[in-house]
Image 1 (cartoon, rainbow, N blue to C red):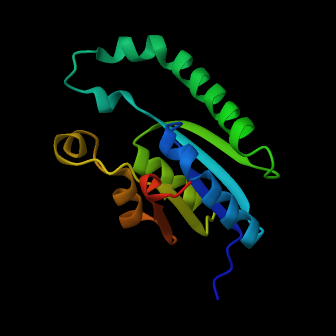
Image 2: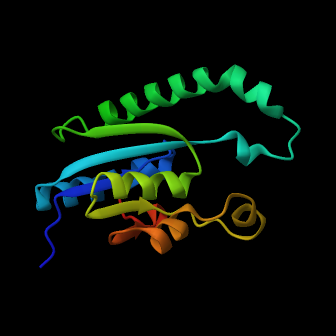
Image 3: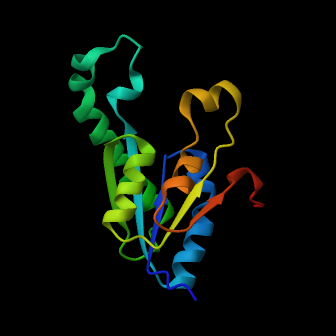
Length: 151
């Protein structure tokens, strides 16, 4: 039997994240686990080729991080106020790499991640974060399709 003590929930503040919160809460409560949330802001390397330049990113980086931290606080307040001791982490970089790094550094036992179901050009442009996490994670990953959840 697997002992799940630490659960990681990557959030992007979209409707998808909000839709799977009930599943995340059920897992946290049934396992009596510590919940950690991570949000990764795409780094400037994701905008290569868009002629934005490093100076552009440097000028808005603090504002972007402040906004992401505020969004994280609001997400927890709105969706997880009844879950004790939620840990949060906001960072900049490659989304998959940062999720995997956090999971390794914090000895995460299970990652619960929503899918967006992107296809075609959108998937080619943005990739599949869930797929990348499943392939590289140091622990089991449960993917949840928010569009299949019955209200």
